Length: 243
Image (spheres, rainbow, N blue to C red):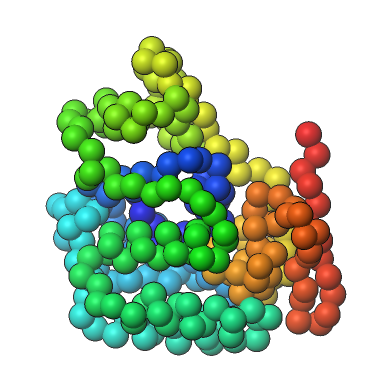
């Protein structure tokens, strides 16, 4: 499902696949990542939430965005907490363009565009994106997901680790698809405001702090061999995970 300014692990999955399919024609879940994510503040990690109402009987793509000034408030909150970060000013025009460059009607539409642009424009990924509504699938739960993966022509399906609770590898193997669960362990730390370090915050945190070197702290050192410079001039280099 599309998330609001997701954490780095979300983009790590995008990095690992050839095709990333947004699965937004499923039930919207209240108080979840669809319309909120965390940022660092002096009071600790704090939620940044898009107000979308309390109605739960709707699919993700049916959730409409409010016509109030939530986007203005979110940019102001980001500025308040990250204006001293080394790369905040560098990415500010990008955020203004996404938030205000066109009118947004639905949460899904906004999230998908934000994710695509962060992946392609800021993280340099070449992954192809698609939407589950572009496929003709029926059924429920795992059956529907499996048919979607089959229609996409996949031989491997990469899932987040929490799906171990409800996905059966044997069902995928029976139709020639390997089910692989992503491992989020081993991410190195980078300079981050307001200790202690929290890995589970929006990708914007790493971008504001590390700029073009942010991918080095997600899927490993790049060919540039660069690190992340703190506001005090220290250079912190990501260390490759030992196997």
